Structure formats: C-alpha cells, structure tokens
Image (cartoon, rainbow, N blue to C red; front, side, top):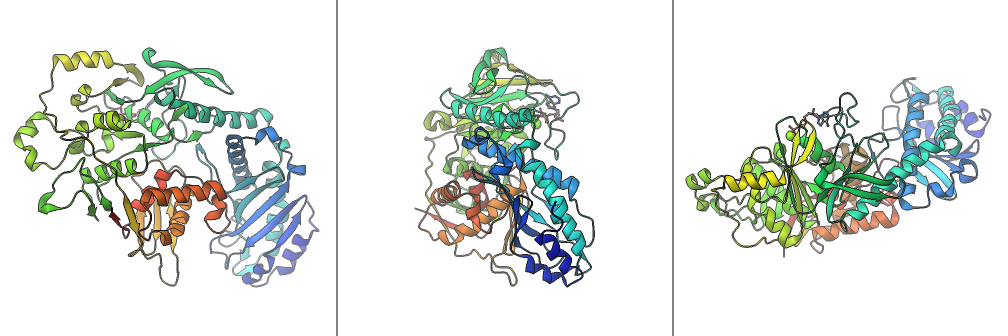
Length: 568
Ligand code: ADP
Ligand code: MG
C-alpha cells in the first residue's frame, strides 16, 4: 500500500487535533488503484460512524461480464461482494482500538437471503462498496496514526479481498449466482404450472434456533416430497430437480405437535426470497405475492373494510371502514388479510400457532350456544373457498387442531416426525365417515375491493429539534417522530437493511398521502421509484438499504398509529 499517499499524509497531519478536524477529510483520495470517497464525517467518536465509498475500476476488479449480465446475476454478485467485504472487514478492521467506534469498518451484515443491497454497486466500469467507518480517536482527539493504519493499510486489504475477481474461487462465485438464478427461474414458472410453491427433495428446512436463521445441521431430516406431489422442475443451472409442487387452492398441513408443521410453513413463508448456497432452502421457492397473515392484537387499524370476517360489532362500530388503536385478535387478523388482498396477495399463509382461534373456526356447539346474531365473526373456514373460487387466492395453512378444515381443503398434507405425507384421500374418507355438523356461515360472496386513501393530516415526523426523525431501530421497529411502528408480527422482513428502506420510503411518501392516491397507488409509486432509480434514490447515499416487496411497505404504512385514511 502507498503508505506515503495523500490520505496517509493528511491523517498524520491531523494527529492530535480536535475530532472535528476530521471534517477536513470530506473529499476523494486515490487508494492504490481504487478511489476512496469520504462522504460524511461523524461529529464525534461516539456518533454514528462516518460514511465512505471505495470504488475500484473494472480494469482492476475484472469481474467477467457473464457474472453480472442478467439482473439476477448482478444482484447475486453484489450480494456476494457485500458478504466478502463484511467478513474481511470483521477480521481486518473490527475496531476496539480507541474510543467509541474507532477503527471499525463495516457494511450491514447479510443474512440467509440474497437481496438487492445498496452497499455494493457494480457495472461495466467499476465496483463500489459503501461502508461505514469509525474514525479513531483518543478521547476527543484525532488518532491520526490509527486512522492511517485503518484507511491506508487495512482498507486496501479488505478491498482486494472483496472487490477483485481474482480473490474468488470461480466455483464458489458461480455457485452463488447460479443458485439465485435457479430459484428465480423456478419462481417465474410457478404460476404457469398451477403451483404456489416448490420445495426440492433434499432441502433442509429447520433452522438452528428462533433467533438464528442458519440451518440446523445436527440431526435434521431432509425434506422429501410425498410421491403424489413430486414433480420435475427444470432449472437453468442444475438440470432437472425433483421436489414437491404445492398446488394452487387450499392446502392444509396437519400433524402432531412438534412434528415440523410450522417449519414447513416458515420455509414457504421465506421462500419469497432467494437464499444463499448452503442455506438448505436454496430450492424452496414460493410465489412472490405470498403473505403470512398472523394475529396481531394491539395493532392499529385505519379504515379497513373487514366485513367479510367481522360483522356488526358491539356499540354499532363500523366494520366497513374499521378503525382502532387496539385491535383484538380476530379483528387484527381480519385486517391483516384484507390489507394483504388490497396489495394483491395471491397466496395467504396462516399458522394456527399465530392465529386467533375464534377467527379460524367456530364449531357446532358454539354455533348453538352463541347464535350467529350475537357473533360478529365469520370464521376464515367459511371464507377460504370463496377466496379461492371467486378470486383465485390460494391458502396454505397449518391446522393441527380442527378437523373441520378437512371438508374444505383441496390438499391435505401430514407432517409425521418431519416426514411429509399426502393424506388427501384419507382425509376425504375421514370427513365422509364423520360428517361435520357445523353450519356454514358464509352468507353472500366475498366482497372486497377497498379503495383506501391515506391522509397525512396527523403525521408528525418531528422529534425534539429534528425535523424528520424517522429511523429504523431494529429489524421490526421504526421510530416515527415520537411514535413507533411495530413490525414484530411481520415475519417476512428478514434483514434490518430492509427496515431502513421502509423508513426511507415512509419519509418520501408523507407528502404524497394527501388523499389523492390510494394505498395501492402510493406503494406502487414507491416500488416504481426504487426499480427505476434504485435504492439510492431513497435519500442520502448509503450502504444501509436492502430491497423490500410492496407488502412490506404497506405493512409499515398500515402500522403507523397516526395515519388517517378514508374510503371512497
Ligand atoms: P410443529 O409446528 O409441528 O409443532 P415445528 O415446526 O415447530 O413443529 O418443529 C418442532 C421442532 O422440530 C423445532 O425445533 C424444529 O426446528 C424441529 N424440526 C422441524 N423440522 C425438522 C426436521 N426436518 N428435522 C429435524 N428437526 C426438525
Ligand atoms: Mg407449530
């Protein structure tokens, strides 16, 4: 490394000065064959770290065009570079040198999903990584020598580890790209094949723990499709793959407790994203517009038509335009479903573990004891077929507790000690031998075509002296002014970088919530902006963002407690 370079000299010159003199660094420097852009310097050693970019021309990086020629490959390659950069930075610049974040170089840590990320930009001219760096200090004084070591010696090592094609094993690199390409190909075929999901034989579905989404390695039973559902799937890179095709319509997953039902549903839930090689779910692929709908009591609901599920509430509360700051179990789940439909979901995913039981079903005895007139809820069981037959919306759900669902399911799968069986025929026999005495309660057809117009009248993103205090706090939490958006029931957020994107989209959307656009239009506009101008268009240039679906954006809007909306 050029330890006698301009940046090095500059840092040595600043040594011992007040921390603010680091601000003088805000420009660009040559760094070997790369360029370092110091975009924003932190005000003090304990503030959020400084943001920088390092750009290496392709003449040096030399990634072959076939590694990024398609959109799928380009996203995958950038994802791989982000992983490498993260790993190398962790070893070479993990900080702990002096005060605060001194000496740390980092990008957001990528998880099990391959996502489009703003941390890496790649095109035919250059590769660029956006990272944050804690400029070193002793107390509040510039630690110039440490800074020089960090930026002029360590950073070039990290750059050559991650931004140069020659640092990658060809086989590893193309495996990453091909895995994503295969998954995306399968996803693009599902609809034409009449499927909602595909899970390849040999997939490893269980995760290490509730907080660690890496695969369970010890004693995991690999997935095997029931023979009746096994199909052959063509892939661009792995030839023909065999596995289970989950058909459209209504599929229920039954089986004993602890037999792996939720694990299977979770794999389907996360199958809207592509996964890294070694994850175990590389070829567990679900349609893009699949939405997990949970119970979420306590959530706010703003002007949602929940009539298909909830009729007249006590006190004459309006359910055609239902509003509450504190939804009950059943009303929260009803709202979650109606909002998913509003955004165009074509597959609903439901787990009894995270559902309101009175929302799922009402049995005959309860129907006798509490007559329909006194029960506002039309349970999901009476709507699920209307959703499929009338609107083409499929459902996959885990129901171990209620045999009533046997009557309405097209496919019945049983998890038996982690082995999946197709018990559809058996279920039909059981249903015929033990007729349900339940009365159907569906009433008229499923009505829903909500045109909801969000209003910003009560939105206040300010906090203290900050004009806009809208910040992702964690994977499931966004601070909005003095309030908080709680996304903890939203399982389809997999990385905090996605939450950063949601916070930025929110800020950009506030002005547009003027009653002239529907929720759907607002979200579509945001998605269009991202796909046209990229994640960078969402605000200050940084490497913190990752891609989301329209459903996640709507989920954040819908949980904003001060959002108002009206229907037309
Ligand atoms: P259920 O929903 O049927 O009660 P879960 O899906 O929660 O069951 O699984 C119960 C436990 O079994 C979990 O700890 C899960 O990680 C584990 N598990 C699930 N599938 C497998 C598998 N294929 N091999 C080994 N362990 C598994
Ligand atoms: Mg379960």
